Image (cartoon, rainbow, N blue to C red; front, top):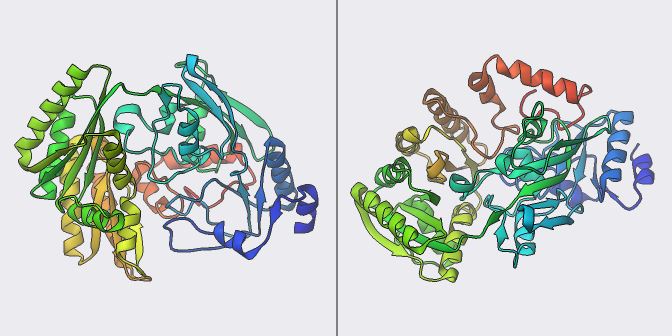
Length: 447
């Protein structure tokens, strides 16, 4: 059967064990299953040809970007093709006058920002991994700057997508706003490849801040740090980054990156402004608010190099923690709640780790109510999943969501009936309209 696919796409289909293994796993989900083959698409025509073959042979297709997802989005549930889009990595247009860029889905966030050097602009969405922009749109990813600039959905102006039928849709417009009909573009963002294959993105760019002030603020305990973060957000100050890292996370960073940060719970904070005076005033007020919660020490980044090192530490925290426990399995939660509920949920997660006798670390984007608990456990142990279930149950009771940015994939689909109720049946109907044969990433989001 695969011979016909190889004839259709010569030199672009791989069945080597290494390629199959790499495309049958992601960065966290414990189960692995290799696809039948990997198709390395290089253009729109390749994507359409792959989908035509899949329809004829009734073989599901799973889009693959950089392989950095955490919830099993990439893992086949049966015989399937992995459609690797990493070779579709051209930056098609940069239009500084319109604050936008047009890219193919395999372009990574770092590659785009490297290309933007000299324009005075940047693309702000920064998940910890150097993910592909197509994959980031597919999961509605976010990062440390989301509290100021938003996640993928507000920063994607338009998409080109290919449906399972091979039809190409142009969704959205390269404008700041439009009221012209249903917003199908936003429907595809966060759909995890279950509705169509993203083949082009038009992205919103932002001016680089003229002035930046970056702080590391250390606290006596985790609850004080979480409460301080809420105090800053409740003040209405225009914070650009507000990240929590617990003491275990700081210790892991120190070991992994050879840093010497105080090993206490910390907030990594940053302000952006066009005015130095405004920046100083905002930072001073934020510091006063945080000191009211019980700070132990404050360090300000003095140079661009020190700022870069600080945010590298935050982005590497996940890998630092994994490195701290070789041979262990790990699970990352992704809960998000209304911002006023965040301190209580952080405290609950911390207590629950102790109650269940689990090792773990709490860190994340507390400025927008989203944080992660990285739970470390012995392979095959069930307690980590039980922890996740109890944390999500408490999160939903607080009006929150099971996933703020990682997406649903395989791991979190069991939570959707309780989170969405009858709306879930409408999601299934939408899936059926766009993909009536169920060929696109089946078994993800829901069965």
